[in-house]
Amino acid sequence: MSSRFVVTGLAGQKKLRGTISVAGAKNAALKGLAASVLFDGPVQYHNLPAIEDVARMQELLRAVGAGTATVSGSMDPALAGKLRASVVLTGPLLARTGRVSFPLPGGDVIGDRPIDLFLSGYQAMGATVQESGGVYTVTAAQLKGAHITFPFISVTATEALMMAATLAKGTTVLTNAAMEPEVVHLAQWLCANGASIAGAGTPTITIVGGTLLQPVVPYTTPPDRIEAGSFILLAAMLGDDVTVANCNPSELGALFALLERAGVKLEVAGSSVRVRGGGPYTSVSARTHEYPGFATDLQALYAVFLTQCQGEATILETIFDGRFRYADELLRMGADITVMNPHKILVRGPRPLVARDLESPDIRAGLAYIFAAAAASGTSTIGNAYMVDRGYEHIEERLQALGLDIKREEV
Ligand code: EPU
Image (cartoon, rainbow, N blue to C red; front, side, top):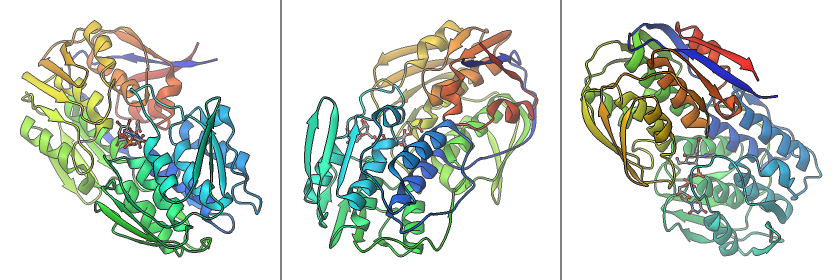
């Protein structure tokens, strides 16, 4: 049985009002959970988001015996195949057990997502890698510290190697490391429990390896900056007066810079961002970039926002191939989008959108379809709700509270 969302649009009228609170960050929580393998004993977690990817990671961890004395390095291929973040678990499992086996990780269909940086990083730390029938086996009785320079930036490879290095012998230096807030949060929490990690949040991270960590300070998931940015875009497009509460506005600088140039009025107070309906807004071009640049996970939602702005603007996707698949569906809804090449689209606005029956291809595009349906006239359905549930908890209830006509239906 699967479910779908049914959304009756506001037909271009602004009327969402109220407060929406941001949940714990998916891409932080998944790594915090994977790190449990580095501990001598069970770890406590707070503010985990109630999303499907977290449930899958918990299943994976239970299956390898995390939190017990007999952790196994064999990851269940069927479980690991379901989420990209399973690859992040290979680092701590290898460091803890000396041998990890796993299939190519699954997850979103957003172009090729290779794992070469993980494998070459483990090899630099003294591990051997074998592949047979699509299953990788990485072995190292004792990982050794190494100097690893990433040829380009990868969030999960930075996190996996940082965690592996925590239990390695000697010092590891990661250069050209990801600077995402989730990396910093993970490093700070590991350090609070005995790890030695310096430089997280800069391009060079230095880790001095040691013994298993003691679970002293519980893990508290920080607010999800992608969810916060998504709700701010929705509020700018369709809100009268919406407050996005419980977020870290300091992590949203690049989005704010774009929105302010578009003419959106944002009032930041502590951990809240108040967005008052305004407009008309001017189209502003964006390019995705690693943090602190504009997040690739926001670009599908930004494209929907651009369909309602005046003028034309481009979005340049620099992180992933194949992340514009949503454009065809927005075209069917009446958007004026030209796919210039696999990395660039041109959006002309404003255009009235009309309801359509849609299927979520991935987490972020799924939410983008909900937002497009909310702007459109008529009633849309968004199938494959599981994709949205992977990343956003109880989305329909939270959007209903802002006045959106959205419900979930079993099909
Ligand atoms: N890449 C390689 N080889 C590797 C690793 C990455 O070529 O070994 C490439 C990727 O194919 C991509 C680029 O490097 O072109 C950057 O990918 P990165 O590894 O940074 O992405 P990721 O770690 O797989 C995480 C988030 C994504 C988010 C990206 C970029 C998690 C679990 N996922 O992915 O989140 O888009 O960083 O910020 O943390 C999402 O939440 O919907 C999502 C896709």
